[in-house]
Amino acid sequence: MLRDALRQAAAAGLDRLDAQMLLLFSFGRDPNARAWLAAHDDQSLGADQERLFEQLCQRRIQGEPLPYLTGTKEFFGLPLKVDRRVLVPRPDTETLVQWAVDIVDDTAQTHNAPVRTLDLGTGSGAIALALKSSRPLTQAWATDASADALVVAQTNAEALGLNVCFRLGHWLAAVQGERFDLILSNPPYIETNDPHLAQLQHEPLSALVSGPDGLDDLRHLIAEAPSFLLPGGWLLLEHGHDQARRVRELLGQTGFEAVASRTDLAGIERCSGGRWPEQR
Image (cartoon, rainbow, N blue to C red):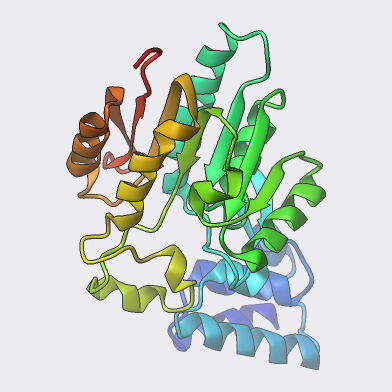
């Protein structure tokens, strides 16, 4: 019975919510439809379903992210397909998207043309697709150095019916000759020797680590972005919980104005950004 399967999963050390979602997934139901479990807790699993559930539970206990097991993750209200080719989108990154939405709205008031946005290191496409979904009139671009990641992003774009121009390449090298009103990114920002990396072993390392202090990619993007921004354009960057002050300093030293940070749901400065001057 379903109730027995949940008890066994709990006894093995699995979080109850995770067990419920994996049980629903094994049963071919929506992983978020937990009310269905309460109404059918006396229903039995078939042999194949039971085997699948046990395998998924074991993988989760070993630390594999739940979205990799179910193949989906909701981000900014969008259902996204995810797997080991991309990072799992985090709720904290929604702070970056909301800031971008605010800037798009402000920019659109003074533009006679669509606002041009660029998401660097798009992974699953989460940021670009969330922004495009929220503000359909934007001209959205997204890049990634991983061809595998772009396959995931394009699959999500097609499933959601959202038009984003995807480019393969390392950061801004993928969009040579283009200029944008807004560039945003959630780049790697974890230190090479960070002890917490062991907890992220199932996710792509290249999307997580960025040098001894975690700032290598942030430095690169801040230095290169001005050549790809239209006058008055914005650069927004997600960063680590203790990197906001340093990122603001880098932005100011490069020449960005109106430099500021925004906090995530926990009140931590999670994103920093600035506006490139109208005239230099």
